[in-house]
Length: 327
Image (cartoon, rainbow, N blue to C red; front, side, top):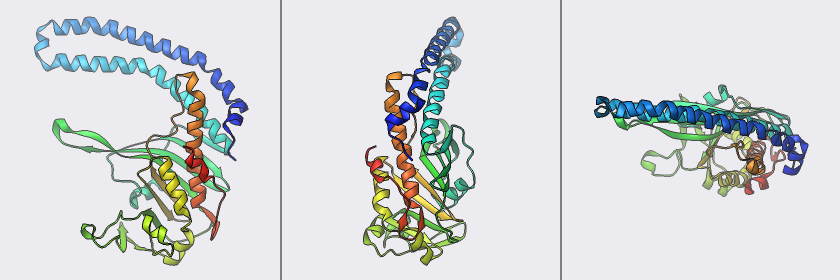
């Protein structure tokens, strides 16, 4: 059950945050000391390089830029460690109000493989994962973490890393047994050739064909597309009443797109929503605001997972769609 921010802070988080002031100050002092030492070492070295024959070569620029970046990175590490520690403390407290656990490190499992196979996330060349919330939520196994996927583009000096997806991946046990595979996505993503004739009547993933499922509710078909290898079961799993809640979540997170996969008795959801849950910081006066933002973000996503889940046809588990609108 979600607690008000006041209860969360009064439950020990406010006192814990107050106790982090010494760590924050120590991290700032250590960072300043490292930057001073870095400058003291770099200045004579760079002076020697720039007043020598090396100044006429690319070596001077490479060493200068590399040295300054290295010194800056070295000095920032104590601040980064302190920020991460505070973030972990805040997010762990938020998770505990739902009966869940939180860790910053993530090792994705089969759910991410399914997300890749069925197009919930785009193709990528490099991946990073963080902020895992896991446990049992309203009687269902629950797992949520953030993914950051990048693709290398360009060639030669113009090669660069471009973010192609950033946002949460949610994996949850479903409220009823099923054997089909069903994909829910924004209408129009899979178009017929040259985008003519509306949405495709089927899609295939690694040879697995999913046919378009027509929905009786017109608002659903205008907004989302549904593909499945079992038409009847798909209509039981995905109810048109989800549309309003899904749209609220997309709007609240300024999300570009939301996709869900129902497979093997579980649901996997991917939401392009940017970098979330960044509750840590070195400014103690911003702690409450950071706690509130992270709590709202996680609460809205947990509400989405519960709303898309169900124990029986026509009845979704209790969620909090209004929470999304507060973000």
